[in-house]
Image (cartoon, rainbow, N blue to C red; front, top):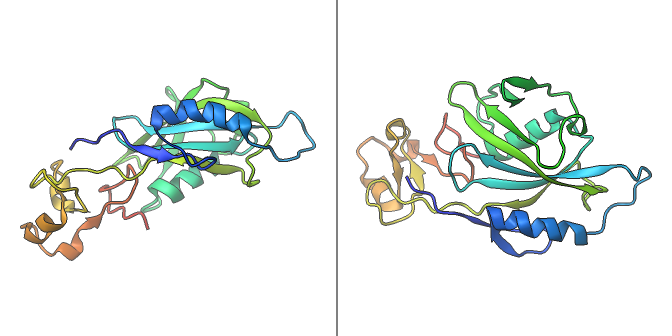
Length: 213
C-alpha cells in the first residue's frame, strides 16, 4: 500500500502545504498571529509536529500551552486519532517513560523529540517534535489547538489498484491487504460488506476495529 505525500490547510491563514512545507510556513505564520493578553510574560506555547514513526501520509501540527500536562496531550490524541478500546498508552524518550502528570515545560524545548505509543498489542507509534516556542497562548484560549492536519490520503484499492479505497476488510487486513474501492467491496469474497471498516483520516485506520467515531 503506497501513500503519497499529503497536504493540509493552515488553520490560521488557510494556505495549503505538505507536512514539511507546513512546518516552514508555520514558523513564519505563528509570529504574525496576535497572542492573548496574559499576566505572566514568561508563559509560552509550543508548536508540536506529530507524525507516525513509519512512512505515512498522516500528520498534525499543534499549538499547546507549555504548562499543560502530557495527560492532556494523550487525551487529545486519543480523541482525535486513536481511541478504540481504552488501550494503554505512554510517552517516552529512548527507554525512559515520561509521566502523564508532568508538564510539557519541564521536559520539552524547541528541537526535542519524544515518542508515543497507543496500544501495546497492535501498537500505533507516533513521533512528536517541538518545532518552536511562542510567547502567549493560542488565540482561541484553548490549551491545545490544531494548526494543520493532513487531508485524507488517497490510498489505492488493493484489488484493482485503479480506484481509491473506501473500506477495509478486517480479515484481509491481517495479511496487509483488504483496502477496497466501492466496486471491489461489493465483489469481495470475505462476506457481508456491512462488516467492513470505514477509512478514517487516522494512522489507526484498519487497526483493532477503529472507525474514527
